Image (tube, rainbow, N blue to C red; front, side, top):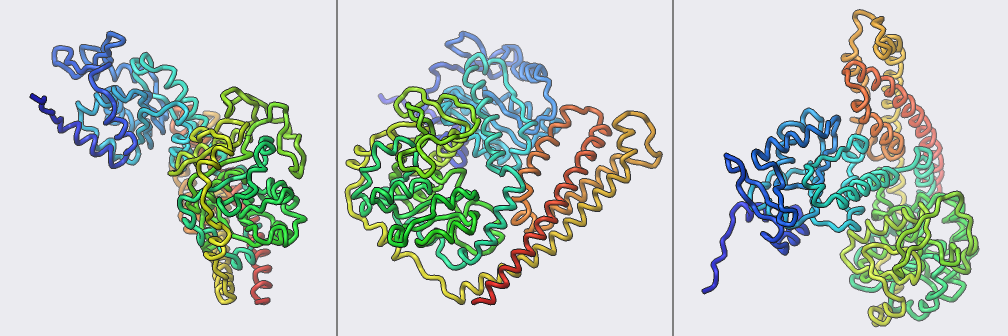
Length: 639
């Protein structure tokens, strides 16, 4: 007789909630074994639910009272200012439950990240207690059963929210010693990757206000290009399940670039800007060339081509590039926005892609936006060649380029042996890994050299061509048939809208600037009182209240932050690099100062710098907007 299946309603409810928010984890859980390495047992006089670890021949929690055990274990961690609580191991969930009830409020916790390596242990827990509220809580994130090599893009996704990344220095690991006994190496590596991904995410939010200012100035300087040409949104999903080749200029491109000849009608070919010259000189015309950097070297990469050479090669540029890039390039254009709020502020929709640092990465995102599958990478070495070369033959700046003082280190190569790379190249590699983790298709690394990119399938270019590039699809015809001309009336309307947006933005910026100055004046008027508290001299004025002043100062910042949408859509991207670093450092101060009044005095003395810097940045923005409006008025008059 067939054994009857016994349903556990607690497990069923947990699994249902898991499927809704974490479908991939749910699939893993359903496939995971149960009662192999772990067994639920009742222990102690009250028969507390405990778990017996068969391999280790011990109980996970103290047999007498697991809940008291958890309280004692967490007390040993001496937690303080735990804005992000990182649980290394879940056990039966006692740790999370105790922390949420007894410690989270006192610690000021805003986010909880739970990392559990062991699928069977987690599945065992799901049979015992109802965790549906935890799974549905948006402030809690589960990472269960993930291989070490997949953690980086997952953690980067966690830090994409500013509400997480600003607490990078107030992030603390929480664990029961049994979790470390079971999987110590994994959890140590997970914390290392978590911190690395947090720092990486900080750089993704911007490097400097000056760099962002250059970007907005270039955007405004490229208004004619933006309003006059089609956007990438006209080509979304026009090549669903059609192959694409992304071409970069790594030294291995020498090995297989000749195979591109004859593929122009069978696959979408998208080149990074540095590889365009290499391809044109060998008689291969890519369908698009991607460029996004706001440096003068980009002008050289796209200078000197004739209309005959690039007349059918679309310049897919992000319009933060210098206006001279457009002036030098004689071919057609497609406007491609990065995921910057400045493009939303502009109010001229052309399509936004989640593009990271390199033109090669941008080319991949273009292929993804078109719906291409598979996407094949060539020349994407992201490492030195074995003989020390940095680039392919024909690269504008040579095969052995000086990459500056960057430290070299080893990563795994596509051939299975370590290969030398640099910090910058490795950042590009990590960007690929994040993008590939979110790509539903197949990414094949046909680089035939270089660094291994996790998530790709390594294959020679010839093998990939034989397997995936068979049908004639006429990519250029598809592109041209979906590109629509922009009318003069539409151009004029867009420019008039931009003019109105600039005027409104200037009014809001003036209000912010005045608030900054008022806050600076208030803090400077009370410098002696603040210093008295910091020095513990007791010489502050009798009617001075540090709590009241702290409320006033933070109130001015709140007023500035409430001036929307100008703050978010225009100013934030410019001040973001400074503001985030300032805020990250600010949230570390409770670790240093226990006394509330001393902490508030230290916070206020730092706020004076914030208001001063933001005031000066706004003044520069106002000048830039004035200059841009003058040029836009000239453009409008010429239509």
